[in-house]
Length: 353
Image (cartoon, rainbow, N blue to C red):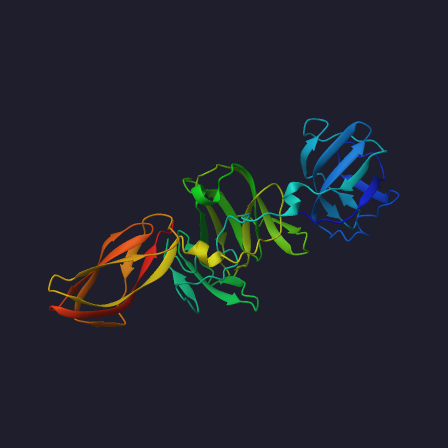
């Protein structure tokens, strides 16, 4: 979503196809500066002169009163830049994307709030292992600490100077229904790269471009063109040498937009990892007992089920997984002797990508 202010200005000189040099406001409007446009913020503009018109996204530079023409969305020149003269007028307008919509962040747990594994202190992970929900160690492993702000947002700090990266795997069939260009934004000093999960040669890490979002927040941004609908994507951050990573977002579009806060992040995380309580007291003969456990939200795939050590058990020789699918599991209990058996424990289910 671009910054929305009430601003309309004439151009100081004929820009041709270059950036707009903004001058005085037309009658009945105000300048971008007077309207509160934030330096470095992106906005959707409409420029007109005679029969020529252009709608696009530009970045405002308060120091020189320039509005760049970063992306042309539509124009009288067939979505190309129009060669404007000295009589052109540029105004801010609201595009559909500027009005906001839900489900724009394709990364679950982008605020780093959900920690189902209850990790504390320095988290050290071997290659491919998961730590906080959705955070997967890179090819050389990962080591980090996580500080939580008063509002619940997390900031990750890499531990040590050795190779240290974390991956966010985006499930294509669930989170990427649209092909096209996306934009990755993040807080912190981490560098990033984005590539298809099927890629054998990831690109180099990059720092991204420093931008100011419409809400005034300074972030790093990276354009991600050519995303294929339905294909899994890897967003990887380098946090070595004490680099930091805060809120991060991958959104469909051409320019950075404010971070989407959602109240259902835990539910989204349960699609990939969850802990299910196992507990009952039943009478059974010497053949043992089978129990079916169900959960509300389907998981991404048939999960790997691991039964942990019980908190308490009586007359139970062993507990085992008989069957598991995306929404249920059948757990067997063998007993030491016929009669009452009691079990209190849990199992973890992982369908992490």
